[in-house]
Amino acid sequence: MAAEYYRRLAEEYPGARCALNFRNAYELLVATILSAQCTDVRVNMVTPSLFAKYPNAAALAAADRDTLESLIRSTGFFRSKAKNLLGMAAALVERHHGGVPRTMEELTALPGVGRKTANVVLGNAFDTNDGIVVDTHVARLSKLLGLTRETDAVKIERDLMPLFPRERWTMLSHLLIEHGRRVCVARVPKCERCILNDLCPSSRV
Image (tube, rainbow, N blue to C red):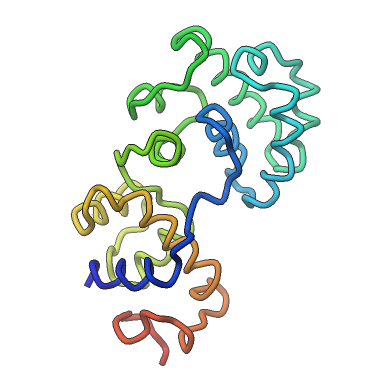
């Protein structure tokens, strides 16, 4: 069942990719931290000016906190995000010569970086499938499709990983997110339009 879900979604959304705009691992790490409790669209509106002012970890680590907060205010929770960004940037400079590390252990040791953020960076900046990004769309669709009964993101990820080949883990998240935004909408799922409606145990048609 999982393989067929993937096959159909991949066919339906051939252009699925990370919705955050970035040019390197540093930019993706910053954007992903900003995306917590915020839309990718809003983050993409904020990051051009942010990256112009702070193009690397060293520049961000030296940022004036008030100035940084004003730049990211519209993403919500801007005070805690500014604290995390400053701490993360300082850690990159102190521990990794300003570069972004390529392992889950090193990434999650950075301030403000959890497993989900680390998975985003590893999968999309470094093409490393260490795990599966479980955001609200992935969590919701995984339950609806009968792939898990869990509600905790880490436990959902643990259930999904054996169901799909490792090389598909990063793309799986993109496909589920795309489907969640376009068809399997939280408030009113468009089951009649869904390419998975004959397989989905939650289908209403």
